[in-house]
Image (cartoon, rainbow, N blue to C red; front, side, top):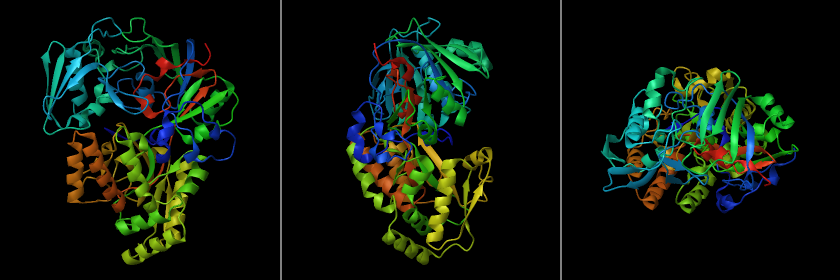
Length: 549
């Protein structure tokens, strides 16, 4: 499932295509200290933090929101996911380096390209002590696939799911499905304890209910409005966690920053780069940055101002991305030429890195005179819109800077522009409600995908996609996307993805602005947690521990 969340999506993105080799390094980033804006391209990227050397009794962790529910089938919020990924396990597991491997599915076989046979891992027990079985796996998959559930779109290509052995579940597809196992590393792969979920009924996932899972931690309590506590499960089938207990509380903006500054909290995955920027150089805190898929993007609508692809390309050529990064995000985002962060390169990384560099000219970090001249030429060919182009935003610092930069870029190439600022709640409606965005021409938006594969994004450009607001239509593009989604060979799929990416970018269906690193802010007494977007799907607290033994 493609995910978009105005507060969460802005937190992620592997920073530099040229620094892929640095992603294996560990250690806090020293370039991010001090008060001056940093250069995102110079950040040290690390999927993990250095290994912990000793156990910890208790860690206090901050979220920016209280979860609406801990049933990710009905409420797939990032706050709930940050908690529950330590508690609930999936059939596959996203690793800190953004690769995927089987987990509760001990083995996976593909007897033909439309069949996936999963062997359920032996010896796994739920937190209530009952064994995890193929029946639980099948029931969980069927629950995820229910049309009323958050992950149902991941099962659109599935024709059948059956128990075919004592520890075996077989899934068949209409056509080969290259991304399905990656979906099983996300929320579509959570295995619930059927008996416990059915016993809780409609109350499942609410305060006072159990977790119905098999992970290294169990839900120890949820005091609505105050805190959520998870505790290491004594009977866990895998390695014992280093941290015994994690207490989650929630705060936003200045309250979150102050809690970390004063030591009232031990860490957070900062949902905004501005939070990380405000905490740079604070004594007692370290910062780490890692791979993810998120980007900042301009998303044109069908209102008309940016209907012509030549106008969209002209805007891309004239946009000062470096200025946005510096003024809006303290330098903690990197100008970027595609609408998906390089944390999505979970395979064939060299291929994607090379393709990204070829597109830089269409999305310059800091446009020069030649870029602006080319943009003006495109506007002259297309004819400038008669009405001002309306840019939709809320009043947050980053989006305000983006919106003003877009207005300046349009004015620079002879197009009138205006900014429409609305409350955040109304801004959120722009993403889902065509009527809400009827009065804007382009949205200053953000986006991330849950899969470590660029093809998890590019279906947004299909002619019939609900996220293709501008009405882009290209039969060859549609054909190539569907071909890539059905191509199981990684090298072949990467080649198709690069072609699809080029077509999407040349048409400027969306206009990429920047990618944003996952930012982990952590007490300098602690280490061991992943620094990548895997924290949303991987038991990050299990490796968290003392820096010194």
